[in-house]
Image (cartoon, rainbow, N blue to C red):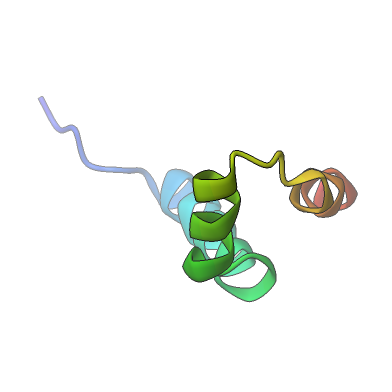
Amino acid sequence: MDFSFTDEQRMWRDTVYNFMDREFPRDVLRKHDQSREFPEELYRKMAQQG
């Protein structure tokens, strides 16, 4: 059985990774996580992307 991603799944993964790197880098996420703040701006931007 082949458990590797399909082309469509790889495209989706790359889209999400690129969005997160561009809009909400790890250091920003880490700050939100440490302060236990809900990153509303991230979810708004994600919603705009569909």
